[in-house]
Length: 141
Image 1 (cartoon, rainbow, N blue to C red):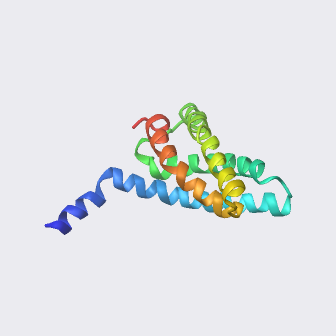
Image 2: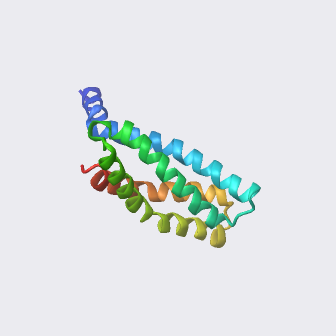
């Protein structure tokens, strides 16, 4: 009985969508960490500026992946819908940039964490916020 209940909960559309969102987010987080490290270590860019650019690049990548995979059943098809969704996700996810940068700054400057570790924490902290807003506004759910 408990196994059947758990199986039904895991197979619900919201659970499937959340797993897909987390998978896309994990790929994007890896890309963001790689970009951040390259900008700081190779480009010698300040970690906050580097994080801002890396975040924006991953916003674009995540939109394409989430539109096709996570929200494929209600994807933004057609040029007009795709561009509207891209603008919307930039506004939605862009509103999370101050949260992520604030957490990053606080953990690096006040706690003394390494910037990559602090960025990983900041990604997780702002992740739920981004999911809720994207699901509601970008893909209208």
